[in-house]
Structure formats: structure tokens, C-alpha cells
Image (cartoon, rainbow, N blue to C red; front, side):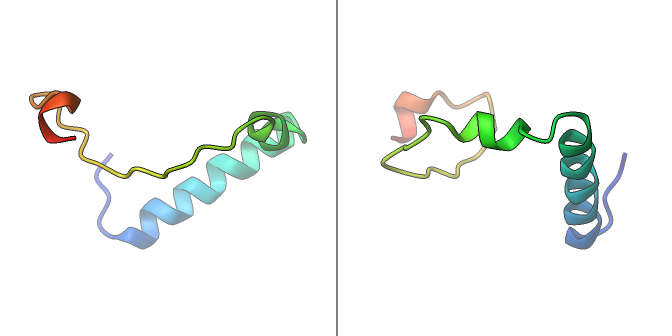
Length: 55
């Protein structure tokens, strides 16, 4: 699927999240239990560069 803009991506994400919550109302609440990371890292998903080379 080709996304034309960020609105398409966000809309599809909202639909996916709503579907997950409809299937399991506690889905995201359960996933969040014990999730307290000290950092949020947003990086490239390019598999040609190992994490150890750019961190």
C-alpha cells in the first residue's frame, strides 16, 4: 500500500488501534503494564547499519 501523505498513515493507525480496542478493550492498558523506559529512541529502520555503529 502506498501512502500519499501523513494523514493517510495517521488515519490507518487510528483505525488499527480502534480495531485492537474493539477486540480487546484492555489491549493497550495491558501492554503498558511495567513499561517505563528511561529513553525514547526514534531511529532509522535500515538494516544495513548495525545499532552498534551509530549509537
